[in-house]
Image (cartoon, rainbow, N blue to C red; front, side, top):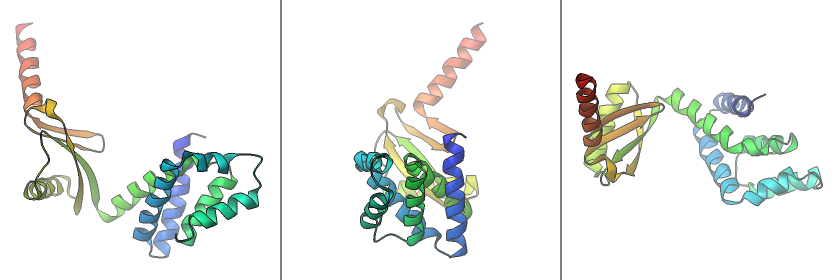
Length: 181
């Protein structure tokens, strides 16, 4: 079974459980925290994956490390450790967030610009994207990219909207090259 399928199954199960208990937002936030802990502490994953460490010790470590988290998040982490799938925690978190965003009408967008966008510019981009994508909310991550020369380039999922000066110049160049052939 592929990694993506495994992670998606755990995320789907946790999402359904959170939906039934009306804890979608809480679980999403706590999964992000758990993911960050594993990313910042790669040794933790190694310890939970190590075959010589007793299962009870792994469970105690998980319970101690994540004692402030929701019981369903802790149970998911324990289950992943028990089934030797703890390496999928980041993917589980990502799939859960995707499902949450889809359910709430939220889209995540990366906006590339020459400089940091002001709050009013963010609001304008947010409104335009929300209308274009028919979403309730757009979560914008602003990336600085001086190579675009001016304008904006927006990436939403696998779609790129290129309104940058560099992109326009490339399109003009491609037209000129195709005309001259």
